[in-house]
Structures are given as C-alpha cells and as structure tokens.
Image 1 (cartoon, rainbow, N blue to C red):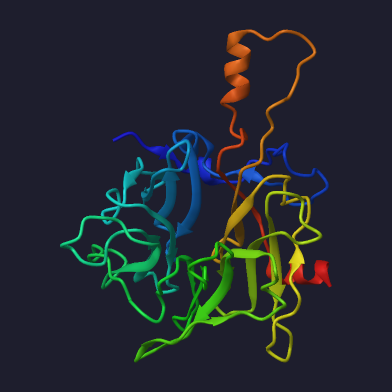
Image 2: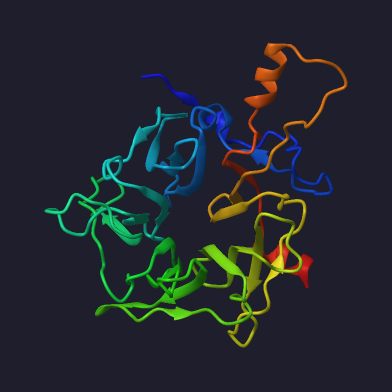
Length: 321
C-alpha cells in the first residue's frame, strides 16, 4: 500500500497567504498532499495515542459528507479509508473522548435500522474496549442529548461531558453552544452556555479543553468578526465562570469562514478549517491554461482546508489579557 510520509504532518514554516503575516507562530497547511485529494476537508480528530487521524470529506457543493481515517504505520501514514462506520449517510465532525475509547460524531443516519431515510442531525458515537480494538456499531444516545432539532460538533471533557452545537428551536436556523453533563445515569438535559459565549449572533463548532479551562468556537454576526465567521476563545476565570470570548485575530481568521477548531494536547498544536482563498481576481497579463489550472487548484482556493499552528493556551491567555 502506498504510504504518506510522516514528514507531511510536520510544520514546515510555509506562509499561508490568506492570513496575516503578523504572527510569530506560522500557520501551515495540514497534510497538503493528502487534503488536496478531496474537494472539501474539515473536522480533524487525532487519537490520544497519536496513531489515528479522522477527518471529514465532502463533495464540492457539500451534498454528502463522510468520515475518513488514516493510521500510523511506523514512520508513515496509511492511505485514507472511509471509517468503518461511515460512507452510507451524512457523517461528519469526529471527536475522541480523552481516553480514546469513544469517537463521537454528527450524523443524519436513521435511528431505526428498518428505516432507510435520513433524519435530522444527531450526535452518535462508536466505542471500543482498547485503542487497538475495532469500533462498535454506531450508538445514538437519544434524549436529552439529542432533540427534535439538530445537534452538531461534539467535543468531550475528561468527565465525559459533551459540548455541542444545536438549533434549540427547530423552526430556526440560529445555532448556539450547549453542554450536557455525563454521569452513570447518562447525559443530562443540555444547558446553553452563558452570554460570555452565546450571543444574539451564531455560535457553533466548539472545542472544549478536556479540563474545561478554555473553549474555542466559531461565531458569525459579531461586531468584531472579519466576515464569514471567525474563531473565538474564552477562558474560565479563577471563580470558575467563563470570561468574555475574544476574537483570535487576523493571524488566524480570514475574510471567509474559519471554523472546526481542535487542539492536540500531546503536541500543543492547534488545527482549524478555513475556506479562505488566495486566488487572484485579476492578473497583470493574460494567463495560459496551465497557469490558470495552477491558480485554481492551489491549496487555498476557497474550499474547506485544514491548517495547523503551534498553540499554548497559557501563552494565548496572557496575550489576550
């Protein structure tokens, strides 16, 4: 089987043109030679032991999503394969539990095997007995975590609590971020995060630190956003309450949609998805077909792509204070 060089996964210092150059931590494409194989790529999830990477791929117009996996094999990565639980219905936004024994995701698959029509978006998960074991069949935790509305983008804490995006009113498309606490009895009634996080705008796709010390999420419609939706970060204060979220700045946010945050605590690397584009709107001279093909098919072409950068929550908190 053809292998992907592990070096593709390392930071290269390559400048990403759609983001500000005024940054000490350069943003670089994540696995560019792999990601360019797909029209749209988003939602990276790395297993706690670093041996597996799951991400979402979709068609050009995003009619269909599937979850794909690559696995470490020595110093290489395997070719991508559709995850064993995905490929039939819309699936996206994978997220590991901190112990690596559950993988949560959002799906439109029917709850009942006798029904073959997709439903609204729910949070599902697969589980395994060890990091080397096979995944179970997908499990829908049901109410109250899932509702008559849509549930998206799960992110799991050390305690098993799930932060996620939902449309609490099924007749409205407005999204907010909620949390459902986990216990031996199951998931509790979800509660909306406070006004330091949720606003009259749209808040969605949140990554929660496993210890709940900080939250990174996307928001659209705020006075300080750059356009299509920006990434924001909020920290807990010494009193345990959330502090007001702050825009992560032009070094990360573009004029297009920036979303799907994930932090790999083992490598202190921040990953996010951006639809930023570096395609020029005019040229100083007529272009050849080959030149136009290079322009259109560059990594940063307005389709969803995953980027990465070094990240320290402590340093970032100091910078934003």
